Length: 404
Image (cartoon, one colour):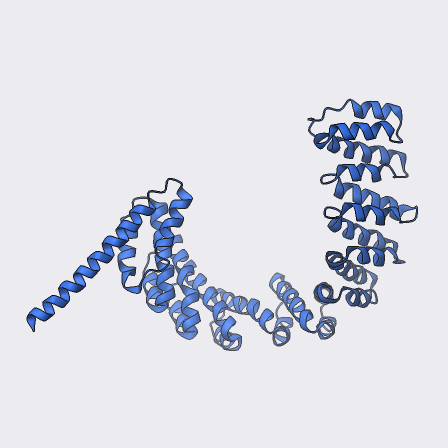
């Protein structure tokens, strides 16, 4: 019997030594990489499929590395692997580390994994940590992971915490998950929060998420918010989100809003989203607006999006506008948006500017950029352009390599 036991111990020792030797060999191989980023990546990859029994050896090996960067990279990856395999044990180990950045980073590697397997136990373990940045980080990550699995239970736990920064951290993490997973349920709680940046951010998330599934109800909720600024914010965000699925309906709805300032904000964000789907229809829609300010700003938003990607089509839309201030403004927007990407098209449209001074300035701006990429074509065009000879001579004297 004694011989049998000794044989088992010998086999275990042999297996452990072989595992350690293999780990050491892998580490040395990874460290032969001369480029530091590749070396750190190779070290981290060693732990990717590391068995649980080898984690202690990996952490010891990490402590023996002379390079601080190598030591941190290998240890963090080993802890992350431990968190995947045995998160409770990994968290307990990390809890005993000295306070500092390394502990915070280690908490980030294991806390979420622990919460995914046992949220309540992970939350209790986090609260046992002494007050520190690491505890705050752990509570935040665990609250977020718990909310993804069961927001109501997470919220119930966080609500019972003593008032203070830790409770605020937990609730904030839960809220920002909840507003996406169930915006309808979250909306009532969010609107009762004290006004401020956090509440505004949560209102934005509720409006965005709710309008995806039920824009009409999201709008009704937004319009019932008692604080005017918060109501306007939610309405605009809901309109923008609605426009992703039905831009025409969103624009029609927004165009009936009051007061005029809210109407303009909502229409403009919807038009901008419409431009990402069908810029021509968005342009034509806003170009028919009776509100001159809305028309000018809406056209500008459509052009700023589509000119860099479809300059020729956008140029035709601008040319079809009737003479007047809207057309002049649109030409200016086009020139500004196209000059860096398509200076030739920008120069040709700039030449159609009605105001003499503005035309000269726009043409000069475009021509200089054109010179840097195709000086021969730029100079040939300028010879035939409808410009004063004095300005032509000045522009033709430009050096193509000149910076401006």
